[in-house]
Structures are given as structure tokens and as C-alpha cells.
Amino acid sequence: MAGDTDPIHQFQIVPLVGDGTFAFTNSAFYMGLTVAVITGFLLLATSARTLVPGRFQSLAELSYEFVASTVHQTAGREGMRFFPYVFSLFMFVLVSNLIGLIPYTFTVASHLIVTFALAMSVILTVVIYGFMKHGTGFLKLFVPHGIPVYILPLVVMIEVISFISRPISLSVRLFANMLAGHITLKVFAGFVTMLSASLGAAGLAVGVLPLLMAVAITGLEFLVAFLQAYVFTILTCIYLNDALHPGH
Amino acid sequence: MEEMGKYIGAGLATIGLAGAGVGVGQIFAAYLAGALRNPSAADGQFARLIFGFAVTEALGIFSLLVALLLLFAV
Image 1: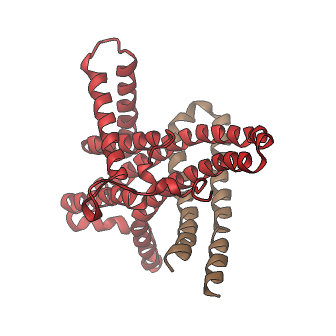
Image 2: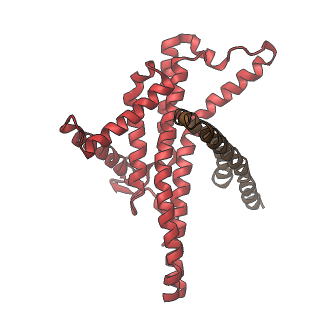
Image 3: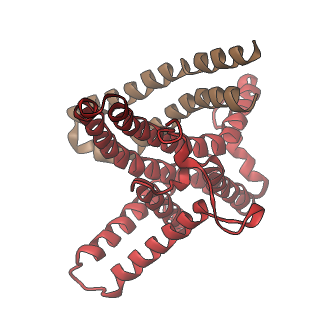
């Protein structure tokens, strides 16, 4: 009984092919599926390339322009050279979150190591590109303008700590939101089976209430899935902007 | 005894979420108040709204992190 309604069970990683370190797991499968869905969708959407876009093409154009305007607004014209990277990140996070909302699927972003790898790729891009473009001038990032000298050591320390905590907050935000949302969903869904198992027909009648709640939370989770993808994207843009213009 | 301390500590760490809740509420309240006064400027500030939300939420996340560390890592 406990195994049936265990809300953590959904995050279990099981090897599909092979065993041990080199196993092809369900996590890897859903990551591959996400990439396949994005690639298939974009190829299908842009294959016709009509002047008046159809449904698929306007959806593709919408997502393209949405990310492009976000990058342009936060990181400026120079930031557009990172557009392919930011667009890939946005689409990967968004589509993997949406696929995870289908019942009985696996949510890739509900594992900290996946989101941490994404966040580290962003931060390493910022650090490497920043040093490549500005040399040691990149360190001006930690020294804001117009600060009196006597409180400068404190400010620099705070800036360094805030920079170091960026990959942690970036990854844990996405991970925690996905984890908490899916656990809530499964806890409410578990109430239905628990009620019907303990009270029989009367329990099924009462079980409609948590079922409705689960439906409402699913709706909320669609919002969260999109919002977290957007937050991840916009923070990526802001961090990339730091690499492009560290003096600000 | 040590086990009990872990659970109490994890429970106490979640109190930090109250601060994040107040902060995030403040941000959206201020945005809504500003947006209703000047609706034409609201769309242009949406990215800043999300940025402020994300930065504030990060502090709540740190308290969650403390709770998780206490439960599973300490």
C-alpha cells in the first residue's frame, strides 16, 4: 500500500538498457525524447515556410521571437551571439517540463544533477567568455562603481558570495519547483486511492474532491513549467550580460 | 537524539520561507500597483518583475536547501 501511494516513487531512476554506471536510464530516455520532440517540432514547423504562417509555424515563430526579444532586451545586441544557446536552454527546460506533466512520464528537471549541469554550463560560459573578452577586466564585475573605499572590501565580499551562489540558486530553483509541484500532485492523487481503499464506494464519492484538486494543480503546474523555463532563460541572459559588460 | 535534532532543524529551516513569501508578495503587489497606475509601462517591466521574483525566491530556496541538507546530507 505504501509503495502505491509513495509520492517520491516517480523520481526513481531505473536503467532501461544495460546496468551499472553505463546504463541507459529513463532520465536519459526522456532527455533524448525532449530533444527529439523539439527538433521534430521545429523541423516540421519550418519546412513549409509560408508567408502567412500556419499553426505550427506561428508557434515556432512565437517561441523564437519570445526568446530573441528577451535576449535582446537584457543582454543587448552583443548578447544575440548567445541566442542559439539560450534558445536551446529555454526549449529544453520548457519541453522537458511539459513532457513531465503527462502522467506516468519522468520529469528530467526533478533531479538536481541535471539542473546543476545546465546551470554550471551557463556559469562556465559566463566566466570563460568574460575572461576571454575582457581579460582581468572581468574582475570589475566584483567592484561596483561609485562605492566609498572604506566599505569596498565588504561590498566585494558580498559580490563574490553572490556570484558563487548563482549556480546553486539557478539549479536549485528549477529542481525544487519541479520536485515540489510533482510531489504535491502525487500526494493529492494518492488521497483518491487511499480514500477508496479505506472507505469503499463512499470513499470514491469523497475522492472526487482531491481529484478535482489534482486537476487544478495540474493547471498550476503548466504555469510553473513555463514560468521556470522563462526564469531560467532570463537569468541566463542577465548573467551573460555580466560577461559582456562587467563594469556595470 | 541526533535524528530528532535533524527533523526539528529541518522544520525550523522552513520558517525561512515566510520571509520569501513576504518578499515575493511585496514584489507582485508593487508591480500590480505600478501597472494599474500606468498600464502602458507595465509590459516593459515584466522582465524586471520576473528577475526580482527570481532573486527573492532564491533566498527562500536557500532555506529549503538547508532543510534538505539537514534531512539527507548531515
